[in-house]
Amino acid sequence: MPVRLSSNSMNLREPVVADLGQRAHPVGLSDSQRVARVGVLYAVGAYGLWGVFPVYFKLVRQVPAVEVLAHRIIWSLVLLVILLAVRGNWSVLRAALSRRRNLVTLGATTLLIASNWLLFIWAVAHDYVLQASLGYFINPLVNVLLGFVFLRERLRRWQTLAVALAAVGVTYMTVAGGQFPGMALFLAGSFGLYGLLRKVANIEALVGLTIETGLLTPLAGAYLAYQMAVGRAVFGSRLDLSLILLLAGVITATPLLWFTEAARRLRLATLGFIQYLAPTGHFLLAVAAFGEPFTRAHLVTFGCIWAALAIYTFDTARAVRPAAGLAGRTPPLE
Image (cartoon, rainbow, N blue to C red):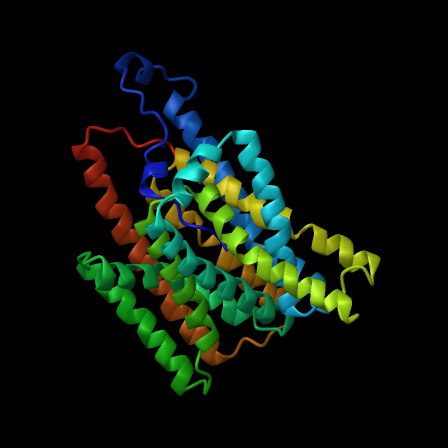
């Protein structure tokens, strides 16, 4: 699933064209509109790819989840180091590593993202994609709640209603459906806390993920070495699965890079809307492709969550537009 960017990277958004002469042209798009449209393409690509992630993990469902996670970590690090070298971001990496507070924070985010990845891999392999999609639908509302608790952000009236409606949905699933959605709540909570800590750390996304995978790589490498030594490793024993596991780094890094490019060009409100593509993809795959049961309890629960997200999205859009107007900005075509 996607990594949250720091506020510094968000300031690299699209340039706003203020020339009235340029606005007067009836034909063609302004520079800001072109930038925004490219940003939308990047965002749709990133969240669309995240939305079909279950297909990849279904292909390797015969491989133990821990081994899949280990390959995802190692091959991601290889690709991320190459990207850092191409971009020349070594100075940013050194600066991040020089601060002890950053290392402590990234140590915590490493545990959170690793547990999130591991549970998602396990969920896909054991036919819990529907519950995983519920978790990522809930995630934006969990972020609002975490901001209220830890950052003392004020909950607006409609946000409070959205969070309450989501709680009703979860409660109904537990009571009427006889199934506590613990997996969904863990995925939403772990990723929400991950985003909160990364926001506080204020570290560029690519550098932060490189450090996190770097911290995990010794453990992942030791695990794979042991599995190979005792003859339990799937990697190397089957050519088809070995080749698929080699793609884990590309699968992980590609949507992250597209997301980074999108975040440079779009408002957070726009990204917040497009992000629902990922859990929607999970939901459709679970019901239509993987044949997971969709009961009445699921219908009520998802209905509550979708209604809550509609309220949350409406409230966010309403809050963003006046702020853009007060700042004298012309919203891009999105």
